[in-house]
Image (cartoon, rainbow, N blue to C red):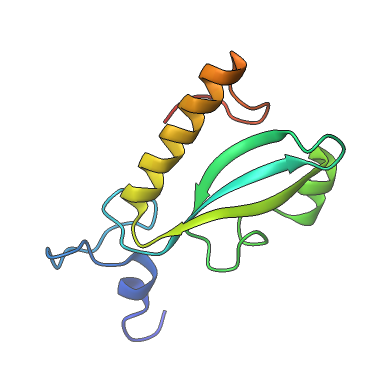
Length: 110
């Protein structure tokens, strides 16, 4: 990586000067809350978050999306991973209460 490459890729924890991994709740990288929607039924098959700069291709291959018969749809973009994690947890909880189970491709709560 070039000058500052790691810091730019990982990000600094707000106000700490500490480098953090992009998947850390301390990350201040923009993070999307997304749905994978079933192409046939429109049903939510997954609720997730990603900080991939080129989502959805940075998160899922076209082959995977085709194999699962889903399309990627961004719901919200947050300025931190922590806010996205909170929104994801709320979305999954509401979905679970309304449907009695998690979406097909979600393995569990974070």
